[in-house]
Amino acid sequence: MLVAYWVSRYTIHRTTIPLRVLAKSADEVAQGNFHAPLPEPKHNDEISQLRDSFSNMQQSLTQYIDQLKTTTAQKAAMESELSIARDIQLSMVPTVFPELDNIDIFASMTPAKAVGGDLYDFFVRDKQLFFCIGDVSGKGVPAALFITEAKSLFRAYATGVELPHLIVSRMNNDLSLDNKECMFVTLFVGILDLTSGLLRYCNAGHEAPLIIKKTVEPLPVNEIYPVGLLMDAPYETQEIVIEPETTILLYTDGLDEAMNADKKQFGEKRIFEELNRAIQTKQLSPQTVIEQMIQAVHDYVGDTEQSDDLTLLCLRRV
Image 1: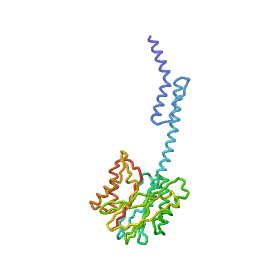
Image 2: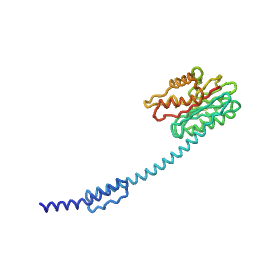
Image 3: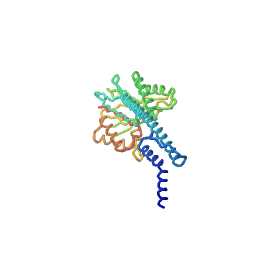
Image 4: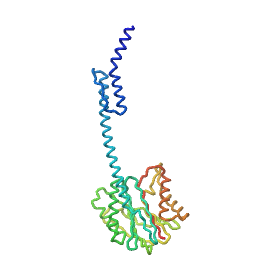
């Protein structure tokens, strides 16, 4: 029995040597050395099959790591390019707000993605303030390219045109040409006479601006097609006199449609509540109105990811 014991032990030890060597190589693979050599099989047995399986695993892991490195490098390059594109896009909207005798102005734009599909713009010409705000359908790079073209067209046509509906009509016809993706932008264009307070405006499917005096009321707007959908759409110019001590808030749907963790929207009711609170506290400067509104949205959504671009433009005649 003693002889049989030692013979069996020797035989088992000798038989399992390749398995122990394979286990050692497997430990090296587990530690990240995917090129660790595996023992060459001497017999076509189960250990040989196990060795072949480890060899296939090594090759698969090596290929996966190489692909992961390539994908990571490409993603990093893309993120870098998107970051540059974001900086370029944000630099295209005015961030220096002019100090005018009887008009105070402030604006803010926060894209939901690396690049956004909102725009605002303004400039002063011939004692008139030309301004616009818009929101393109969709998000991401296509929306950013479309909105950049829309902003360029606004600047081009507003430079020599005095009526808002003509600006919007010309923008619409240009953006409708070869619009195979059927993208569009809701747009509000206004021209405010800095002396008389006469506001001429044209609304193309955008949210009605809010007039803030002793109460909050939406600006009367005609519902017309967004820009880019229909060639020769019948846009109209409307007029209203903005009295002194009146604030106008323009915004995109990233404000009222901001959602919290329960998928509930911020809503118009909360917008009116915040503005009424501003009236009561007499905190109606454009910068204060916008900053408090953004803070209210942040408080409401919490840590929930931003669902849409958020853009606000606020004017106050003093």
